[in-house]
Image (cartoon, rainbow over all chains, first blue to last red; front, side):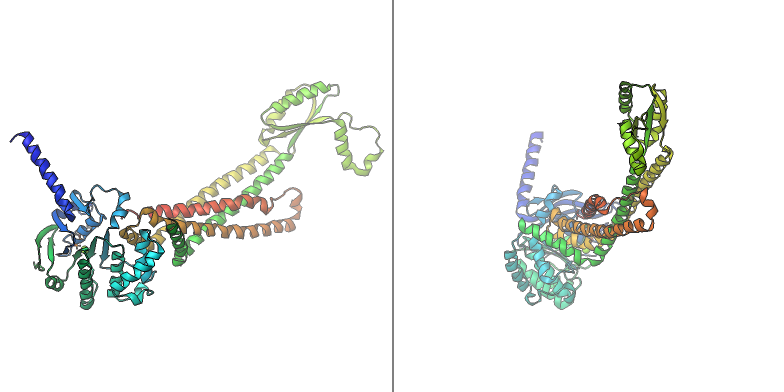
Length: 253
Length: 296
Ligand SMILES: Nc1ncnc2c1ncn2[C@@H]1O[C@H](COP(=O)(O)OP(=O)(O)O)[C@@H](O)[C@H]1O
Ligand SMILES: [Mg+2]
């Protein structure tokens, strides 16, 4: 094959890939990540992953399989050692520190441990996210109560986090994550600390958020939920994608 | 933007009350350091003042041969004034010398019709550095037309010694103070930041810019610095005046030799210096400690 032809092909391939990535809100290509203090053992290996706008995706796998590392790459809390990470059309591998704040405003995040500001009440915890994006107090006074009633906490806006149950705290975290209308919601084991009833409620909320058009990525250990919700399931094992199935189920070892 | 400014300001003020333990610890640290700093400044100011007063009194007096002409005297004065160690050189005519002396004599001076000190015109030479007195005298001994040289009784060595001790002690205290305050403040801020680490983390996850994360902390630091420096300044002011009174009444015999600087003259420098240092410590302390936690 002539050199020229080879080059043409290469160019076409990369052009296609470029087009490819723009269809997806999350696009990972050959991503590798190893922690510097892990003796070269990679946390993620050759990850290829595409998530379209409006999808609902579960990420499952054993503890230590790399789920949180994946979420951190999407948040640009970590950067990939190699490969491409494109989220909301932004190439995170090339992003400078100064741009990270703006980028994160297009995402919402919730964690297993809620991460609320303990010394501020429910209202202020949610308003906080709006203040950061410089919304006016007038808008905040409108948006925050709306969000709180969406998650079913309208009556508790004055409570401090420690006066709330785990389920209620996670709803506050969810309201905070959603109040700036992110295009993607990332949830790292959001129900890991909750009882089955609260787990169900939170999952229903996530589904509702998804129905309103937000792309939702949920890391979970909860077999029953995954099996009953019939969503796309990506299974990680020791840093590689073991399976990726539409309407999938929780895979046992 | 104005909204953000006031929000930041408000958060900074709230932080001061929110983290009472941290606020108290930081306040105590800054106050203690600036208290010691203030004492040290007051002492150094006064010692320098006392040494200077004594030094200023040190002079070498030169008397001339009887046959010397006024022209030669002016010439000598010119030569002496040009020397680097000389601060001032005054010519005292015989009349002036008598006027001065007769003041001391009081009534007893009244019987004189002629100036009994006809031959007492002299040069009064003041030094800008007392340790150079010997050098000057050595030079004057080589000058023609001079009859007598009166040195100051207070030996140059004593004053030089006092000054050297004060200088060493002040430098030592500054060094010690700096080391102690840096150690204490970095410790306090580090303990305080462990509480805030979580908060900073959350802010970063929600998409706060570095400026937005840092501003309330820096503002809080400046408030604590301001209060932490105002406290010792006020306390020291009252303490200084009390000490001033105490020394004046209980060591009255010293009053002829030593004069202390009034509080207002010390605090016109000490107060702004303390406030600037306090606010500066607060600003840089929080600025750099928060920076370590911004890369999340
Ligand atoms: N900060 C870190 N430093 C070093 N190794 C880490 C760090 N965080 C995670 N790891 C390692 O990376 C691998 C993946 O971890 P993680 O992504 O947290 O897994 P999961 O969320 O699926 O439990 C594990 O082997 C874990 O020990
Ligand atoms: Mg995890």
